[in-house]
Amino acid sequence: MKEKTRKILKRVGAGFLLGLSFLNFGTGWGRQKAKSVPRRAQNVRKETKEELDTEIKQVADIAESEAQNVINQETQEQQQQQQMQIQQQAQTQTQQFLRYATIGGWGVAMAVFFTSMIFNSPFGLGKAVLSVLPGEPHVAVLSVTSKQSTWQVDDEVVVDVKLATNQEKANYFKVSLQYNPEVLKFQKIKIDRKKFDNLEQNKIDQKNGQITFIIRKPKKGDDFKKDVIAQISFKALTKSDKTVIALLQKNSLVLKTKKKDGKGYNILGKTVSAKLKIINRLNEIVKCQKVDVVKSRMTREEWERLIKGAPVPLKDGNNWVDLNDSGAALLCAYSDDGGVYVLLRNKTKIKSISLDNNLTGDRAEIEKVDNWAEGGNYFRTVTINTNKWLREKPNKFRNIVVNVDFDVSKLRWPKKGSAEFVLGK
Image (cartoon, rainbow, N blue to C red; front, side, top):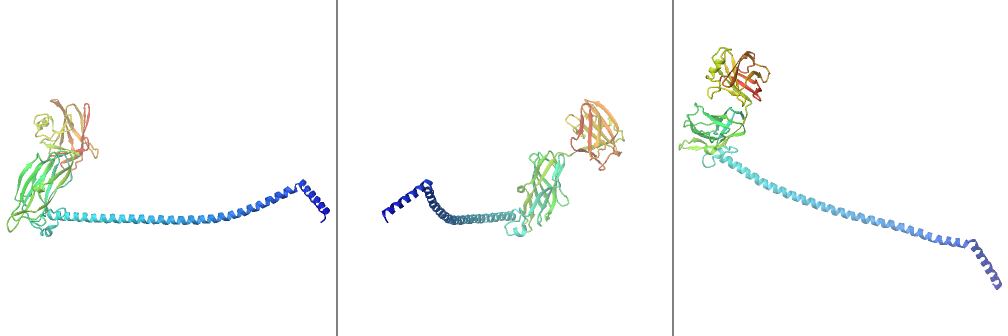
């Protein structure tokens, strides 16, 4: 190329570039090129990064799953080991319990068997088993029983002494009892004279509450099946939630006579005591004395004759009943013609007296009233018409309540419950 031509082309190119610079085409083009290149690079990096994140996440999930499986497996193994240890401990404890229970049961069984053989308690094994032991079998059972478990104060408490000899014949019985002398008072001992020869009361100690007596039969003896050999009576003195009439086995005997040597052997193996309860009286007893008078003629003179000429109660020969702690008292009498008479005594004037049935509410009809005062006491006597009054038994009026009006007070007797009027014994 010629030099001249080269110069012309350079000038045209320079002008063209100058025009582009004026119109800002070059910068825009450069910018567009500069922008297009990084954007493509960014897109490539973003795609690469997303692919890498997905792979990493998959790897992480796989690692986490494997780790969780390992942890679960270890946890299950630990739980299985713990369960096996618990089962082993439970089996060990069960074996120990069974071992101790077996030893304890064996010991109790042997103790029961031994005591039943020797002492006939708690089970009477009988002569067949006891015959293998040396000596005489203790098969007899001596017991004290009561017809009722609860008695009232002032009641006559009756208990039966019973004997069972398990087909062995016995002819000599020594009975020793102990009781609380503050609760019970000994009255008497009764035996069947047709069955027994005699009764020997060796010792009656009311102070210490002890009774010892002997009953004999003919030499041939007899066997007993819970038969009554004696009946003992006490008087209930005071309230007691629990009082015991105990048979003392060491002081009691049941002897049988052997045919060969004629010696007596004690076959008593068990004693049973009686447990009683003494309560306060639910009903008071009023014993009416018999008088030989015509109905409605029980006057002051007859009452004074009945109380032996004294208007105050005497220690013996009268049945005065105290109504309170202030000196009020009551006396009852009756005659064969159906008359029932009541005499009331008090330190203050007596205004009225009535006798009501506690169950029906019926009031006794009073036919005659008499009053007097003597020796610092006021007296009031009434005659009751029993024809219109409920009579439960021929000689008893039950469920009676006595209501009295004094000058300054009133009285209901008994305070709780009722009374029983008994005509005669």
